Length: 328
Image (tube, rainbow, N blue to C red; front, side, top):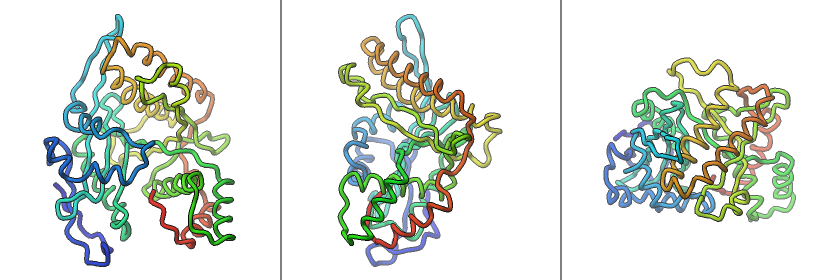
């Protein structure tokens, strides 16, 4: 357990009570305690249905499956293995969850994948979310001492569409956003927040735009004819561990490691391991999609850079002046 100290602000108009952070398999060791913390209810409140994993899967991953031990399975005449360590961090006030962070360390690449971070709406402000994140990263460095940094996915957004949405809100004075408008703003705000934490995009040096990767379908139980329709496009962001051993010699090599860690080591292998023989076709599909991403980006000179620049700061200021509450 960690006590979260030196965080300003108030909660619900009252002085902030003591806050602590607990982590699965260290402080929270069984399913009853995990569910009893309220973290899964908070998770469902923070993230829309289309962005959520099933609660049962999360319980499995953080308590009984991704334990930092190597797992092996046979796929035809091949033996495949992987080694994951998934942890859920719970920020608590009076023993109840008010924030969560879900991370997976891939011991093959020594990269940490950030699945989710969120803080309850009533507790935002005063730098609490940033302090919570920093403390989680410090704890991860102790739990996964060989990690070299954290990688995460963000949804691509269109700057022109963002400008159009904000301008329309300013001109009409309306306070309600439709689903597409809210999604556009939310994507932008998430990137702004991660930039503040020090994250950078994997970018094509020639275009200064983030490289795009395509995530395989997350549900192998769907008919194979439906897999392509369930794919999603993402940009990847990276934050190196300050005390890590030297990183790969190039951003291009780090890009390859990140793509393979997320979509092969963490996603495809864990999904196929549940039923190797019936999911042989899914393995071929997912690894082919990853290979296609890496082949498409192989000609790019990869660099780590900010995508949002000085020209984007006025957009953020204009959004804040609208004073519309939109959880990210």
